Amino acid sequence: MRNSKVIIGLLCAIGAAVCYGTNPLARFLYAEGMQVPSVLFYRFGLAWVIVAIVMMFRKESLRVTRREFLTLSALGILFILSSTTLYTSFQLMPSGIASTILFTYPVMTAAIMTLFFRERITLATVLSILLSLAGVALLSFKDEGGTFNLLGIVLVLISALTYALYIIVVDKSPLQMSSFKINFYVLFYCALGNVVFALFSGQPLTLPPTPTAWLWVSWLAVVPAIMALVMMVYAAKYLGSTPTAILGALEPTTAVLIGVFVFAEPFSSRLLLGILLVLAAVTLVVLGKARRR
Image (cartoon, rainbow, N blue to C red):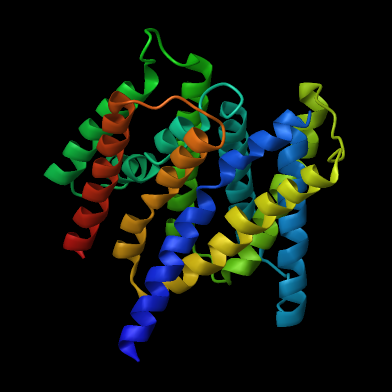
């Protein structure tokens, strides 16, 4: 029985990471003429409807206290910023490289916890920061000289930072509710936030223009959102948080493979080294946390 649960946890951890790694498929929607606000509005809107239906069947209350409302609002704003900057970066630089730079968020989380929450600084934390900086530097340069779009790199780093802050708020807040309820409100904020983004950016919301576009919107709503969320819960439960986090390295790996084989993005030994440095940095952080516990 124990072995079967470990196998289920392992498969779920792999599945969740691979599902998360398919976010770069949003580029198919850009090719259909959709802009970032529209892509994210339909992605989060459909995901919100699915979560709402699940909550209805679970007969889960939507009531929240004022303090919970403020915390959920903060989470919603952070997730809007993280998703918008990431999806915008896909238009400015190779999506596989963007997804790998995004994976520095565990290192950023460790650094923030050390600087602002008085977590003990360790050699593993210092090494992980240095490795991630070296990895990002290698990923920023093109083989033919020059760097990838600087704005794209900055946007991915902002996405990683806001996601790290999202994780910290979830960890430090007193929220006592299911992940479905948290995501119900966060997804609602994300959908609403992209309506506001569309109004102020001059990129009006447009319907997916073709059946294929609806297919990709549905994919982004179900696979890297709902399916990944559900599988991550089972992975952490049956396998443990540390191995689940390490297997999360399959997320940028999947994104890189999609970029190379689906979108013909550049790849070289230098980029491979940069990816490996980022993955090594995250592994150090995860193992360091496990050792302290």
